[in-house]
Length: 265
Image (cartoon, one colour):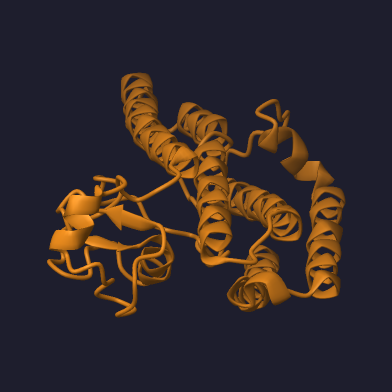
C-alpha cells in the first residue's frame, strides 16, 4: 500500500507538471520564466526526496546501474523499477525546462526547432530509462530458488534478448530525433519556374511565398506555414502524403509533455 501511495503521488505530480509545461510551450516566446523556474524547483525537490526516503532500496545506485540492493520479491522489484523510472522522468522534465528557458521561440522556425529539441530530449530519456530495470529483473529471475535452474537461465536469457531488441529500436528513434534537430527545412528550395507553375501563392495562407519549401511530393508552401501545420499533422496539406520520419513508432513530444506511464520491464 505504501508503494502504491508513493507511485500515485509521484504520478499526480508529473501530471500537474505536464499541464504547466504544455501551457508554457503553447505560449511560445511569451512563456513565463518564473513559472518555469517554479516547475524546475518543485521537480528538483522531489528527486533528492525520493532518493533519501528510499535509500534502503538504493534507488540512486540502481539509476546509475551500480545499485547494491537487488529485491527478490515481485512486488519489491516492481516498486524499485517504477519509482526509479519516475525519478528519471523528473530529471527529463528538468532538461525540458532548461530548453524552454534557453531556446528562443519568437517565430515559427524557432518554435519548430525548440519542439525538435524537446522531442529529442524525450527519446534520449526513454533510451536511458530502458537500462536501470535490466539488472533488477535479471536478479529477480536468477533469485527464484523454487524454479529449476535451467528455467531460470532460460527466463533470464530471454529477458535480456528482448530487452536488447527494444533498446536498439529505441536507439534508432533517438537517431531519427537527432536527425530531425539537424534538419533545417522540411524539403528543398523550389526553383523560380516551379514557384511560377504553382501560382506563386501558398495554398495555406493564400499569400505570396515566404521562404518557399517544396515537399518530396512536389507541393510548395511557405516554411512558416508548414511549421504551423506540422504541429498538428505530419502529412502534406494538399495530398496527405506522409512527411517526416518513416518509423511509425516515432512520435512528436514538441508540446513538452512527459509520459505518465513508466517502463515496467
